[in-house]
Length: 112
Length: 112
DNA sequence: CTTCATTGCGCAATCA
DNA sequence: CTGATTGCGCAATGAA
Image (cartoon, rainbow over all chains, first blue to last red; front, side, top):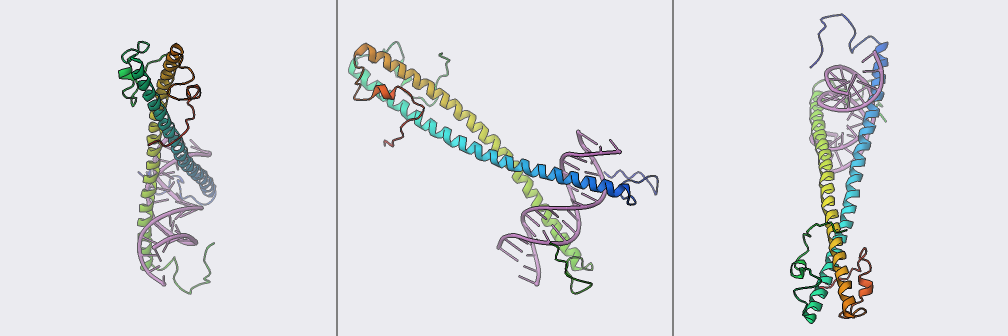
């Protein structure tokens, strides 16, 4: 809300004569320009960020695809060999049946 | 550059009397508001997009991590079994040595 | 030429 | 008080 608490004349506020006024205005105009330049830069950076993230994303998706494929391949091989060996239900004590079933969501266990 | 080529009076351009002028101004002011609202919306959407992408990214990175771990695990298992079996250099005719070496870059082959 | 959209700019209010 | 932000209107210009 306008801070107009002055009736007629008790002190310059915005529309002053021409001395300090012009000086203030010029200063502010410069500040405004600075601020706007900064604002536009930020906008551009945000747009760039979107592109960066899109690219990272694409790369990661390809990676997931590749890894999934490899994993599937190894599992097939595994099962095939297990069939030929009668090791079916035990392979180093690993639950192959469960492990080889699906890898969409791996059980996260830190096995260093 | 300002198109002010008029000396005193040759035709209304921007600073007209008050009839059409005000009407034009009001219309433009509305258009400006519309435009600015739209602009701000777009800015917000871009920011949201950044967050969406960041999230997708995090999820994908976790997925890669998990898959990599699983793959490493299977490969170890594979090698271990191969050692105990003397199948070392042949396992269904697969180049285990190469396959199990590294999976950072899988050979992409569409095998439908 | 007319209309609406976009953009640079200055003013004033407000924030910090 | 000072600079930074922000809503707003004006005018130039772009686009249809």
